[in-house]
Image 1 (cartoon, rainbow, N blue to C red):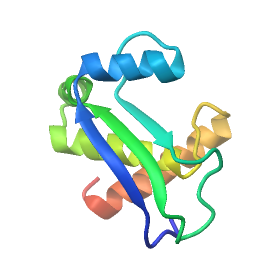
Image 2 (image 1 turned 30 degrees about the vertical axis):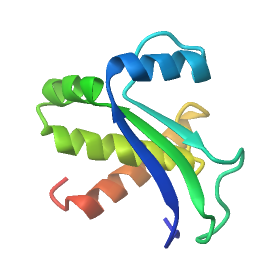
Image 3 (image 1 turned 135 degrees about the vertical axis):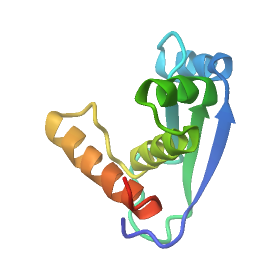
Image 4 (image 1 turned 60 degrees about the horizontal axis):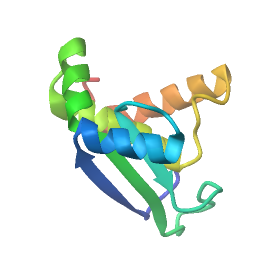
Length: 118
């Protein structure tokens, strides 16, 4: 991704906690699988950008997704972590179909670095 260094915080939590964050910061009711909170409005501009932001993952939702996809929970959590990281780097699948495709390709590329069998 072109970033050699950067810092982020990761919170693994439950549906109740992430639902509160989803309501407070996105105005949406109910839990979600992952939330990403960038430290700045613009995506980082280079490898020495410092703090990227915060990623929050609901383990309750991740567990349901893992069961539904019949994949191990750690794999689902890795996928969600990468998804959140891409949001911190400026990717946004809700912006357009092209951006969703671009984000999906980046997510698959990063997952392959973690687990070459994916």
